[in-house]
Amino acid sequence: MKKDIDWENLGFGYIQTEKRYVSNFKDGAWDEGCITEDANIVMSECAGVLQYAQTIFEGMKAYTTKDGRIVTFRPDLNAQRMLDSADRLEMPRFPADRFVDAVTQVVRANSAYVPPYGSGASLYIRPYMFGINPVIGVKPADEYQFRVFTTPVGPYFKGGVKPLTICVSDFDRAAPRGTGHIKAGLNYAMSLHAIVTAHANGFDENMYLDSATRTKVEETGGANFLFVTKDGKVVTPKSDTILPSITRRSLMHVAEHYLGLEVEEREVRFDEVKDFAECGLCGTAAVISPVGKIVDHGKEICMPSGMEKMGPVTQKLYDTLTGIQMGLLEAPKGWIHVIE
Image 1 (cartoon, rainbow, N blue to C red):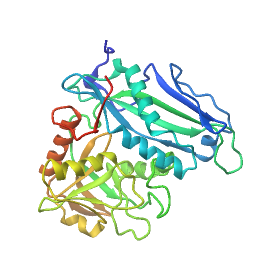
Image 2 (image 1 turned 30 degrees about the vertical axis):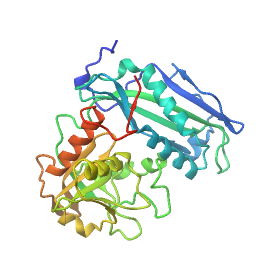
Image 3 (image 1 turned 45 degrees about the vertical axis):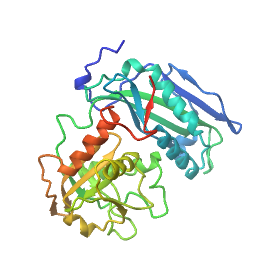
């Protein structure tokens, strides 16, 4: 039985569900892990995560397909990205197969919270890991906790997708040899002031440039950029300091193999942006958010696709990828992980 929730009017916020997964790392090994009903975490006041921000996370969704199955999208790639994040922050690796199994268990245990097909809503899944034992000298923790919780969420954009107005940020998102390529909590903590500033100035999001030269497009605080040239080629920025988005990777595959478009991953100079026909932000939450206007310190770049709706290529990419996710189109092998 589905929960009695107003699925059509869900926001993008936290609603506690009944079950979550927890596994502890102690004495050099992970325990076998289990499903628990306890949503609270008890830890020392001196826990590594509280002192030195040793925490990593992932974000993904479960949803109901047209034929009534509950599925997730490419969880193996989230598992791999978490391994990369753990390596960079000197945290123990939570095995990829166990990661996918934990996600499967939690979604299955909370299946009553998976929104019905056609509601536009989904079950957001948050796997995360953090240092839990007391750490006062600056060093990695010795003990860790890996957890997965879920929460039903509505569509990221209420009332349909309207193109965003974004600004070129005065802040840097990541250092050249820093942690921009992993999903660490610390990257998001330092972006908060930048996004609050952007919102205060009337913008929806930031465009971060590379911090070394401030001439190349990187990403926004929580999504990768995707551009379409006037002759229909799909271009995405290549950089060692942006988070490798699973949605972006999937969209590039869709562009090439489903839509027959030319694709290119390369460095994108900011001075080229005015020449593109379309611009979008891609990530788990919204799939693609169209960008209508980019403002560089008062100088406006208006995308030819306009401020009313997605550009035609962006729309096709969005429709194709969401069609694959919802079971309307055949998925490439291994993309859809069926839970029940």
